[in-house]
Length: 490
Figure 1 (cartoon, one colour):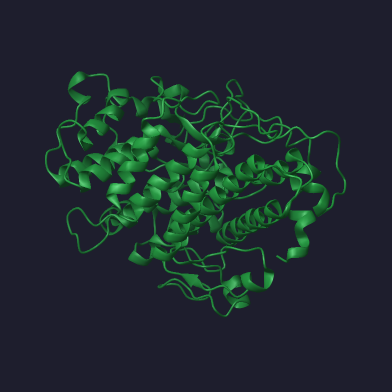
Figure 2 (figure 1 turned 180 degrees about the horizontal axis):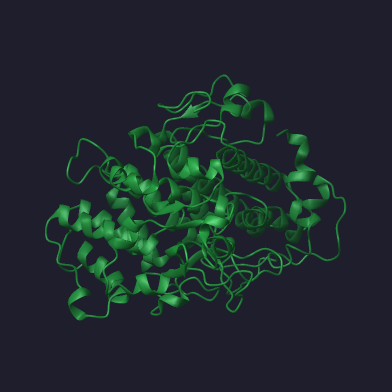
């Protein structure tokens, strides 16, 4: 994408002002606008940034239900299986993804477009004489957060990735993939900047306070930073950052599991508002089953694996509240039902959750466990029990019995599976980053994926924890290389 495309890329929200009305109030329909006009007021400048959030739920594939990261990563892990007759979807389900997969090319290309938008916005915001320091700080902080967010999830899917830190077309067309450690360092730097630039307050498109948590704030940057430190195995900093979020009285675990994903959830650190007039999420639309999954195409064809369903303790309320059951002549199917609203059942307003407080407790529990803080005050067990207290009614099940590190990691794995299933690729990234519980010489994926593949079909190989870099981009940039195990056409 060339830098001259600012009008078509970076100000899309102004061009679709009606659809973006929820994110920012902009008067009147806009049919054409110049770069100089965009950055002459806080509202117009904010619309450029807001378009990143709008695009994620309206047109971008990154958070788009059946083709978004939550579903595709879950299909690639041991969480979901599909009954879709479509070859491309079945290839993802059986971990036989082609380097020419249109779905993974769409994720790769759309996310780099989003990073381009963030870079371009930052460059123009910095140069604008019309914006106050407070507005510049807010918008630049959001852009740095979003650049970190996109780089983090790209690395989670593809491993080594190009770091795109400018809007310069000539630079971006010849980027090489950077080691994951270098990517994480860049992400940490962006998030630290975001922390210093953003405030605790959530703001509207006019930078006034709001109860809606749809634009990232300082806590969102801190939550992602805690997660990045966890993945870096920087246990001390992971614990410290998650503690900052947990100690913030703005956030609280929702006592009722049915309220966690609603627009008013106190658990939400950052969530995305559905586009336009919709009150349901794309995940709610694509994952809830209302008919035999074998008769669909992409939407409404994915069900929980029996392996995941069998993981749940019968007394775990998450099984009853977040998993739906559909019985049709073809059989009984279990499906993800964290989001209840869809086109035909639109009774509650739900936002697409990105970061929530429960995950921060689980991040801190793991960080503490890896530092030997297994039991007692301020321990991993204490954080695990916070989550178990909501999930279980019987008093005996509200408290973990884990004593050793291996037992605690098994407990953490259970809680992450039961709490975060089919959310933002958490499971796939967990089983790749963890060493094997039985055999530390392999990763956890090599222990669990062979067990579920007979149910899903296909075979498992270690290299499949990473997706293939799109061959189309490798063809355009000789500095890009492919992930091990993949070759052209397979």
